[in-house]
Amino acid sequence: MVLRTSGTTAQDVIAVARGAARIELSEETRAAVAASRAFIDELAAKPDPVYGVSTGFGALAVRHISPELRAQLQRNIVRSHAAGMGPRVEREVVRALMFLRLKTLASGHTGVRPLVVETMAAILNAGITPVVHEYGSLGCSGDLAPLSHCALTLMGEGEAEGPDGAVRPAGELLAEHGIAPVELREKEGLALLNGTDGMLGMLVMACADLARLFTSADITAALSLEALLGTDKVLAPELHAIRPHPGQAASAANMLKVLAGSGFTGHHQDDAPRVQDAYSIRCAPQVAGAGRDTLDHARLVADRELAAAVDNPVVLPDGRVESNGNFHGAPVAYVLDFLAVAAADLGSIAERRTDRLLDKNRSHGLPAFLAGDPGVDSGLMIAQYTQAALVSELKRLAAPASVDSIPSSAMQEDHVSMGWSAARKLRTAVDNLTRVLAVELYAATRAVEMRQGLAPAPATRAVLDAIRAAGVQGPGEDRFLAPDLEAAYAFVRDGKLVDAAESVTGTLA
Image (cartoon, rainbow, N blue to C red):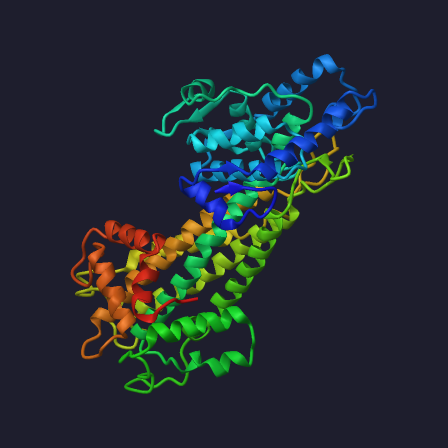
């Protein structure tokens, strides 16, 4: 892909973070970076102190730094700020973080030399991934410690993971790929550290994952409705048109497509008549739809942040170098927390449907726990326990990180966003939600197969065939269940559930 001064998309971030997309710099980018650097060089030659160019940083910004100490100043800020601790952060997160910092450096608003931009692009293209740790960002003045560990690699210091997955000294990896370490100059150390890139990268990837999971949830809800002999009349578009939330309408339409042609629906007035299905069935589009609308808002925020150049100070087109507060992560932190709430609620309603499938008093004729021989077999009793444990953790993860603030830097940074923490817990929530939906899928497909004499919807049949082909076994006597659940998890995570349904329905929202 060609990196320009603006126009980076979420798809670009994912292509670099999760794929092997190579980055090229446009001539426009090189010219803009060189022009902003000229302003910095001009200011550096003057006696007047300029923050980040000829002063210390944060609470130490009152000290004017003489020219002979400025290279050391830039090295020192990177070394001292590379103070992360804890487990390593995932490769895709680090690549997203680096690419987004590169995107801002390429904007022409940071004042770095073209050499810095070219070197960072070369490191990404070589598949070299700095070692970044879980703890170290408060989400204000950006993701300082994570970005510092990346900047350390740019200097040829610290540790990084090579394309083969082995962690080695960064200097060795750079040398092997013919990349010369950068000797930082005025403003460059600060420009490499001062952004919301980590939390934004995780937001972009979470949005992509959740879009797939909301579609997956509509499919599993439809299968549960079918297995419980529910009515699809509540999915009629005219009912959702009178409450015009777009996400709700999209979820209802998805469920209706999946259920088209089912011989299971409409039996709610048979042997045990019921006027209405339970909320977990009847209100599935309302809950999933609210999550979809929350996701749309999060994408809007992500797109705005992708269009931003986050640094402090910034170089303006007229040559002014101005301090600002654009590095504060609040806009990103809020939506990260909003999405964790939506994920928790979606997992919660899915677990209630699973529990209903397993309870012989509420499942309308299915055996207890969907067991082959209830009493001798326990069926899916403990699979629901596992699902409930995941939902319980989802609820804990929904507690917002962005309402917390711990002052730092001698009270200079006295209100922080905790956006990095919000992003880290959302990644766990997304994975938990995937597992929760996998358990519902496992239960619903088993329940459908246990119904005799009725024909499932063609889309359901396609899902059944695909999940069995993926190694997830159907009804029968008790067996070692963990491998089946793990296979169902991979089936949902890798998008195979959506692919199977769409092979019949066409594209789902």
